[in-house]
Length: 473
Image 1 (cartoon, rainbow, N blue to C red):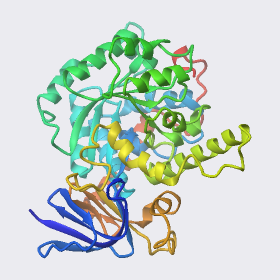
Image 2 (tube, rainbow, N blue to C red):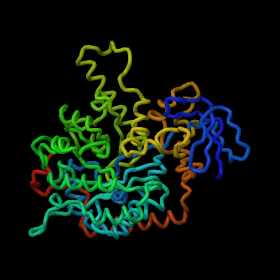
Image 3 (tube, rainbow, N blue to C red):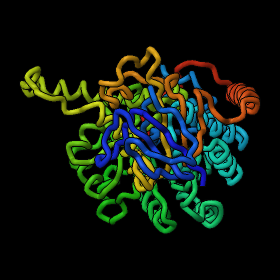
Image 4 (cartoon, helix red, strand yellow):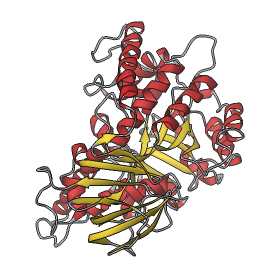
């Protein structure tokens, strides 16, 4: 198999046995890391100059609705769940066809690669049928990204005489078709999961059915969990699921901001993972992201970008925001306890935030045996950051590489991105064919304008009157 040798780089391995190397080498054989150490000799390897670069594991975006890519630039001033559902699920999402899903997923995944993300959980809750599902998967596979494809279900406006989405169990036939077909094996770049309603957004029997279905087929299941007490579809849903043994490491929670301490302990004791999407939560939620509260229970957060209509979904930006938000909360807590500014060390460090964005995401997706650190035997998913430009210079050598990643690096500094031993970004450019990319840009624009015209969408905050209680958070 072809070998690649990255020479003389600053290495942020995120492997406690290896640590950081101020000047080290990484040997890759095929799709796997063989060695991370100083002065590796490999006469048959293609050599990549790592001098002046920082090499680290690829970022893991553990929660993104990739299909929303062509609806960017419209949502930052929306008011919470009301406007998001009013504009998206009750209008623009209903305009999507299979080709639109394909375009959103392909350009959205390529944008993630450009931003240094090598793995995503594509939380795809736009799907009405098998054609849309297959189009979403085709796009992920064409992009070259590593993805956990969380097959979700559409949430259309309620109509008289129809069963509303929150009463509908997950379609078994689709999971059976996918799990016995193209996703029969988990030894591939794109794997299968289920994006379910959960008890905040669906009835209890629906949530229990969906989790059992996921377990029957050996899949992770993930649910949005945000509702305040008194506004959830099922008020005691998570404790009930825990008592029935339906919560475990195979259940991922998005958000979780409004969990009480008792609820948080229940889900963490069950082994559930929680993904914070700090930027969208800061825009729309009044409770802080689920970061430090998890850490106090000995759990590790993961991070996601969530919604492209709000902002460019850069994991570097999300990681920086997560660190700064938690540091600010730490400082306020110290002050309230009379310990500020007398504290000798911050509770949250930049290295913690890097862990959330790498190994934390890998654990949430149950891929930490494959990705999340630069460890021999793991897949060669990594990024190379050019530290010679003015964004970073002269922070290395001599500075903390984790500090450099969280507080200085930008997308423009990400020179190379490798997934499973293959460069998907090289010398600052995607390796995806440029002429095809330009054609896709026009196709995405056509898709965007058509859906906005069909939906009679005008950029404004939706004021459509009172919404049902389940939307009012």
